[in-house]
Image 1 (cartoon, rainbow, N blue to C red):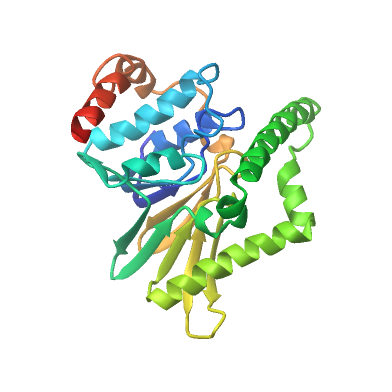
Image 2 (cartoon, rainbow, N blue to C red; image 1 turned 180 degrees about the vertical axis):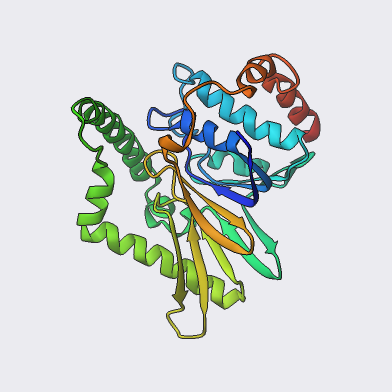
Length: 284
């Protein structure tokens, strides 16, 4: 399958290492594109809930596919989030085309994009981190239950459903939180004179123009969604931002020619142990 050319791809909230992560679908997507820049906007690896007992091959293959972008000379910016906040002690780390940052101001044509995860706006993250972590465990449990229910729905020929999205849509406080999140991001971006503000964190893909609360201007707010439920990413091509939404019907279930090379790469140049050794050397 011919790869799609994409100028910029933004992915967030993958939550590798959790049961809710759709790593296989993400891997299919990453194999289908040829990006010029990749932005990983936080919560890619879920260190909060990481367990040695659960790290499927598909999750490792996603990591290796990202590393393959790096070895192919494609700039990859990993911006930290709350679930991978432990990486923040290593920010400004560079390894070839790979950069680890908290935020980035990225030139996009003649415009400026301010990109960061967005957990800084989450009050529970600032004052009740234990509550946020407890909520993460509850969310992961809900996703597992949802997956079981969807399996039965699919077997019965019925449409899948999302528990958490239904809850978010009906609970006024959840809707209010999302709206407040988006408005706060927009207000700050307008104040700084940026053209785009790009976040993750709230698992709600969006592209819309937002007027600042003080009427000083407007900014294009974008959110990349997640790879737990939404299965979305942001793409920039031909001077336009769009939301990519994964649809299994658009991808072949047959193994492609790259699958065999993936298996070889598991034990060759993309050896994670080798990369970790390089990481250690860079720190000294």
